[in-house]
Length: 276
Image 1 (tube, one colour):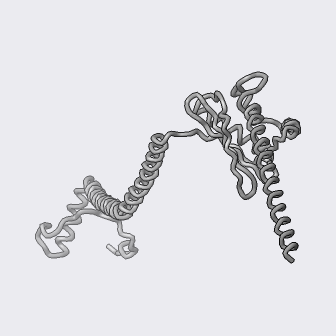
Image 2 (cartoon, rainbow, N blue to C red):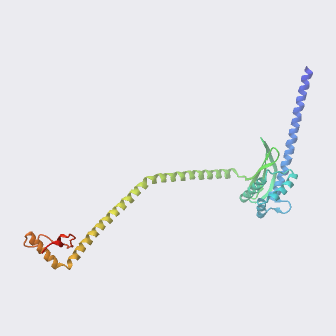
Image 3 (cartoon, helix red, strand yellow):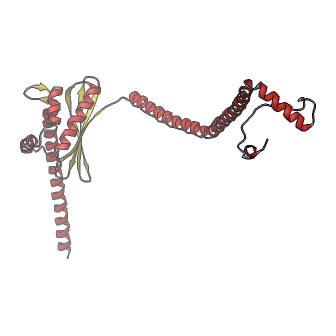
C-alpha cells in the first residue's frame, strides 16, 4: 500500500514537472514569435529594409491596398509567423502609426525591451519606440492562436504633461456643461418673456387697427359732407325755393329753424301721381 502511494506521488510530481517544463517552453517560443513579429511590423509599417523610412504616399498606398495585394502579403507574412486577423487590422495599425507620427515626429529606434503579458484569450506585447519628440508605445494584442487582433501606437507623456492634459480635458468638460446650463437658463427665461412680447405686439396691432378704423370713419364722414356740400354748390336757387316752401308749410316766417344740406330725388311714385 505504501508502495502504491509512493508511486502515485512520484507520478504526480513527474506530471507537474512535465507541464511546468512545457509551460516554460511555450512561453519562450511565444516570446520569440512576438520578438520576430515586432521586427516584421516595423519593417512593414515604419522603416523598409530596402528603401528606408516610408513616405506619406507609401503609407497611403498601404491603407488603400487592394484585397488581392493584401492576400499576397499575408501569405508572405505567414511564412514568418506574422498573422493579422484581417486587412482592417493592418490598415488600423498604419493609421495609428501615422497619427502618432504627427504628434511625436519620426521614429528612430525600438527598445530591445519588449514586455509580454499573458491574458485570458491570448497575449499582449508592448515595445517602446523612440521618436524625435517623445517615446511611443507599440501595443500588440494576440488571440490564443497567436493571430494579431489589434496594433496601436500611443505617445508616452510625462507626469506633468499627463496632468496638464487631464486638467484641460476637465476644464473643457466643465465648460461644456456650464455652457449647456446657461443655454437652458436662457431658454427657460425666454419662455417668460416671449408671451409678454406677443401680448405687446398683439396690443400694438389692435391699437393700429382701431386707429385705422377711426381714420376710415372720419374719412368717410368727410367724404359725405364734402359730397353734400358739392351737391348744394350749384343749387342755391333750388335750395331757397324748397326752404321757403318748407317754411310756409310749417307756418314759419323764415328758414332760421332748419338747414337744407342735400337734395335727393325721391323714388316714391306718389309725387309722380300728384295733381297740380
